[in-house]
Length: 391
Image (cartoon, rainbow, N blue to C red; front, side, top):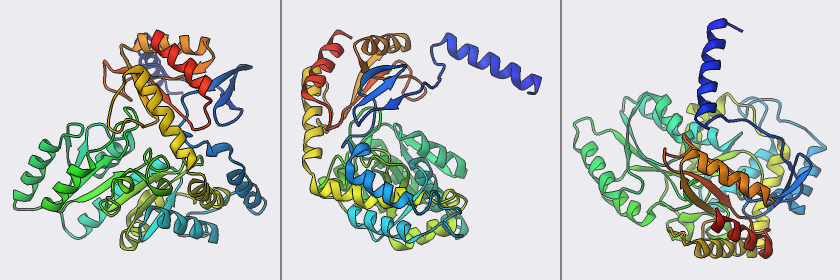
């Protein structure tokens, strides 16, 4: 390795270790949807995003097994030969589920957000129009990275800061250039488990007619009819111009999807570099998508169960937010060392609860990020509550 690069890496990683911010992986073997094996010891997993337990559902696994016998991979990008009937059927199933005209699959939720933002910026710039992104301060890193990469103007408004958002929208409309304004937010935020003020956004959209990109990564599956999402649950099905679904959360799979009008999806096919230059997701994953949606439709008790458990834990720990039944429960401890120490104590008690540190969360808000699954047992949740109270 280049000596200068080696020195820089050594200094940086050493500093991260000193600040308790050094990251590394460990081998975690799944046993089922809520239990894992680490170094030969079993733990109850309270760190997964598998809210509905679909990673190990027999219908989902059977769909993967049947398809995997025909082809292991797509072999090419979707615009070459990597678009099969399984991809088409999966996208159609997602669009029907989300109530949109069309959907397009990408290898990850990160790339779905990237492809959607790239398309918005590229289309506007191709037609000589300025684009201006307005971003909630707590949106996922993939959205921030995507917007920054476009080089377009962007403004960050305080988390759910509707007064500031309205002021920024008014400023944009008052400019002579009158840019295409795009508001970006999540439905359920990944670190705090709270929700966007969807009703207020709808009211602003009626006044300023902006484009809304809504990331439903953590809302899909947990909320809405058949898990169609948080906006659907509140009756704002058609509010978002572009909706993002991450298949690796409640659906228990891998990949992401952009949902919207057929016109916008055609735009992604022509402008979304994250899609154009990526090999299509494995056909076996595509086969599992309709199966996962079917489970959500037929086994609605899964959604009810995980939300009930979330209310129980939140009430016991006096952690409130809107909504009060999100399965993402932040136990904010402040300093990094304190969060790490609490995570170690939880593991000693047989529970895997990961400490989340900056830059994933703001400085001074390091936390245990507890996530629940419908498959967690009542006794396991009782032990979790007792342990968190002590932490």
